[in-house]
Image (spheres, each protein chain N blue to C red):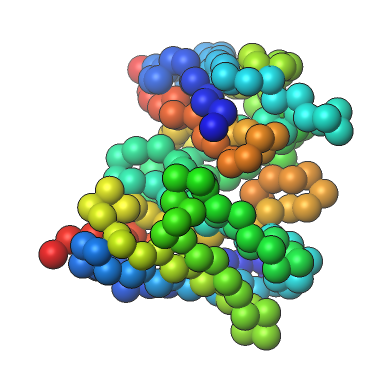
Length: 118
Length: 112
């Protein structure tokens, strides 16, 4: 069955780089896009960016200068890298699959909490 | 970016009561391809969001038919006809017509 799971460091120091991995199973990264969505503690959801089935990427314009999304299709993994982290980047980071026919996010990972603090 | 404004921010309901949530967009969500990419998600406490409604009014797989969506252009509504205990959580409208994807601020559904 379709599954996604995020993994990452948990704690990152201000100004450092965040690296997260989304490991997927039950589908191919060359057939479906994977998106990142984040949620600061107690707040709403924010779309971060995406890597499409063909390998192209899209980023939230507010984060674009600091963000990179890539993938390794042989390992079924999607990577998020965000540099110059600030305390406002503290959030739960989710990866989610887009169901192409309906153009919606159908499966989500459980999320990984990232805290930016010294 | 498209701003989605949800009202009310909090709704209190008794079991069996019907509830409506509004989502108003700062721009029309009708795409040039004729589709309106407006969705509704429910996030239960400490869980990931789950799809309820896609393309304004289509019910997601496995979603109970007490949920329904309606609207067009810039005004959309999610209705729950007979709230059940498992419906408690935060509801978000989401748009995918305009880049970037944006979410509404959320409506928290509580038990009265």
